[in-house]
Amino acid sequence: MDATGRGKTNTDAALCLAGEGMPVPPEAVLTAARTHLAQLDRTIRAHLGLPVGTQVALHGESSGVTGIVEEVVDEVVRANPKLMRAIARRLRDAPANDSDADAGSVLTLVVAAVAGQAPDPRDTDALALTLRAIDAYGLTEPAGGPGGPRILAGGPADAAFAIGRFGLPQLQQLLEDLRPQDVHPSLRATRQLGRALAGVPDSVGQYVAAKHVAALLLDNGPTAVVLRLAAWQALRYDHEREPDIAPIVDAVRAQGWLTQGD
Image (tube, rainbow, N blue to C red):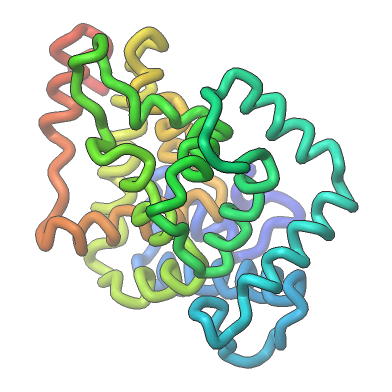
């Protein structure tokens, strides 16, 4: 099995198997998730030039993260100039904006968010370009025509909060608060939601970034499984109760895009 093949660690195996729905003890899954996230944290700290073995806050004005982010972005662009060109190509058809937001703005926003600095909701141009760069711009556009509903009703500004929830420090806290008894229900729910979204046709899915979300929710790689657990825990916080995906699954099935067994 791929999850337990040569070169795979016990941490990777536990996360991959749990992501597939195998009955891995939930405590082992949580331990593996925290270990995997800690490794990502060390990698990011080393790349930012911060002490690896100490608890250094990457967010907040006192950490000087803004200057660090700018240095990292400059280094990334120098090391991989094709990346900036690739982002620029994805933004080729983006509407003109009133600011100087461009591919560099997108890369800066993403690097800062990973480091724990939430995007400024007032920087709607950079946020709009970021959503477009990851093919999620449909979240802010009306479905079914000019008068249709929007997933992010407040426009790109609404995306700032969601993006800010997935910096490394925030992910660590979400996993710390996740109870063992919620591990497998979280993974089952995200897997079921992923199957439902994968069935949405492209003509509709573009409005909700369905294919991209489905790909993440059906990915059993260690990082994706950690993100699935954290995302579901974030929804618990937001709703102050267990999230309910039944209406979404039922709506997709009612359109004939799913079979009864899915």
